[in-house]
Image 1: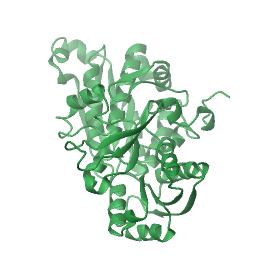
Image 2: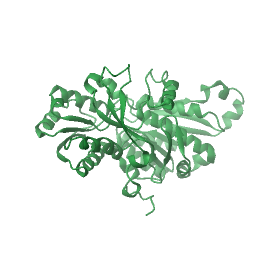
Image 3: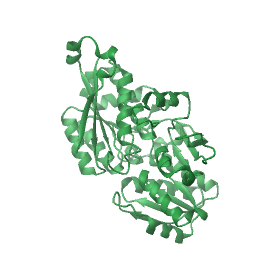
Image 4: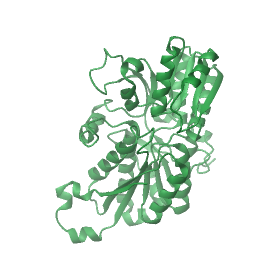
Amino acid sequence: MEMNRRSLLAGAAAVAAPLSRARAQATTIRLGVLTDMSGPYRDTTGPGSVVLTQAAASEFGNRGFNVEVLSADHQNKPDVGANIARQWYDQGVDVILDVPTSSVALAVNQIAREKNKVFLNSGAATSDLTGSQCSPNTVHWTYDTYMLAKGTGGAIVRTGGDSWFFITADYAFGHALERDTANFVRAAGGRVLGQVRYPFPATTDFSAFVVQAQASRAKVLGMANASTDTVNTIKAAREFGLHRSMKFAALLMGVMDIHALGLESAQGLMLTESFYWDLNDRTRALTQRVRAANQNRPPAMVPAGCYGAALHYLKAAADMGAAAAKADGRAAVARMKAMPTDDDAFGPGRIREDGRKLHPVFLFEVKSPSESRGPFDYYKVAATTPGDDAFRPLAEGGCSLVRS
């Protein structure tokens, strides 16, 4: 397990210059980015999430308290992630961010509640975080399985893809994504002809699974997985010729995955995201600020969520006082919910009482090689769904924080 601490006060001379003695005595807010630094989600979360969290802290500046960012690799293992979370919270970390892999996030969610700390989820998708497992200490910021299922699954059924076969990662995220998508497929009049679940994260060869999908004669291959697994599933499916008879539904795929797959193989894919670097002037400005630190790449959706969530938490801490925010994680999250959100990644939005962050969601179509102007120019907007419509209705989640 590797953990790194970096003080962000030294980032700007205007912040770091005078009053070092007073600065040393100031309250320090500690943000811990718990992420995948070595596994299948590294390229879509990992170092990028650390960079974007650091960017939020640096942009926030010194408003009466110091900010430090730590990072650790949870290895996509719930026991490892839970141990790090307990150590961090016990040692003075105030907020844990990111946490891709839903099984790890659900464990951290419970620990944050137990310790009365803050958990700002960006990387995990399970909609249970704002449903049966909702917590007054947690905000689910970027996306979730309900949003992905509605944005992609329902849209494909309406275009004629009315029979599905799922290849599913066998853990909490995959199960939730398959469940939510299947519900939208059936609600739209479609059918699920079968599914197969594979061991996560121990699978690299998807040949046997795509053969089962081909034998089902379904019109749509639903990939209830993410990142490297989705890329490898698509490669295997194309090798077996499934693209000639089936539509590919990439239920969670991002710009870095498209980059790894290549436009020749990815063109025409439909996918849902809540952030794209080239969406508008504000997203392009954010990209320009962080690109050099981010290995000369634009930010992906999950790191952008870390940026937005960290920035909003720091605003809330400044509003209520850093000492009060550190002392009571529930109160800090309540203050976040009471304040409207606004940042360069997602624009204006809000946080509901169940902890669900609301912002617009976009159905993208992947460009053909001839349409792309260069590296990472990969998407065109097919549809936009307002935040109030994109996520599960408040009354349907079963969250205990929601008043009936």
